[in-house]
Amino acid sequence: MPTRAGTASTIAIHGIVTITSITWEGVIRILLVEDNPDLARRLAEGLRGAGFVVEWAADGQTGYALGGSENFDAVILDLGLPDMKGVDVLKRWRQVGREMPVLILTARGSWTEKVEGLNAGADDYVTKPSHIQEITARLRALIRRSAGKPMPTLVHNDIELSPASGTVTVGGNPIELTAQEFRILNYFMHQRGRVISQSQLLDHLYSLETERDPNTIEVYVARLRRKLGRDSIKTLRGLGYRFG
Ligand code: CA
Image (tube, rainbow, N blue to C red; front, side):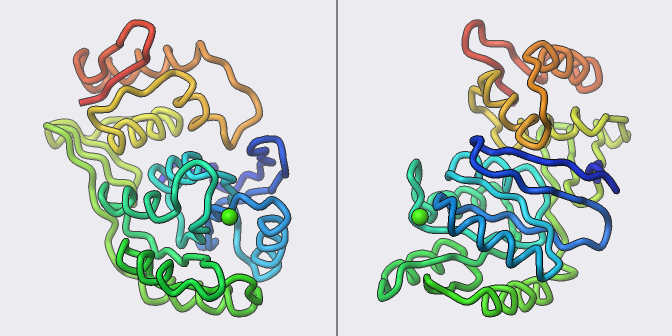
């Protein structure tokens, strides 16, 4: 997997908080989707204190994009999000074959939320407010249980992408992609058939980086076309791109 192996980066999502992310083999990586910045900060600190690497998304769209295109060992998903329901984020991940364990955060006393969340594909839940010790214990149990489950390969025509091994083949032949090209293709394959704007791609690519340069998107798309075939990614004038 072309992660930023062994590197450290400081990320700012929505300019609210920065979390330092260090990614290498053997590190447990958690995606935290929570719109309340104070709660997110407390959870992230607690999780990092427990040895996890945490990436934070403050809304459903960002959470969906990150969880749909990057590998996490587990996700903590708040169900009450401002832009889309947490349950819908979860349903969409499951629809596109994302099988990572998901722990949902539910409001106290709302048994319907728990049922809805579990039916949508959640693996476990905790009720807010909750102790960080309980959350980390449940996460560890979920990660233990999911260990060894293979991650599904994404297929479109003769293109196959394996998120687990970070490899792409065309017609069975392996092709070389840079980490950024891999991330874009992974994103396109999860959003197959949809119109993707340049700013969505920028958000996706640079949520973890500091600089945003729109020109780079065109360069990456051009390179991907060369490697995958000219018609693999269509340009829709004034709208963006469509894969598949
Ligand atoms: Ca919330």
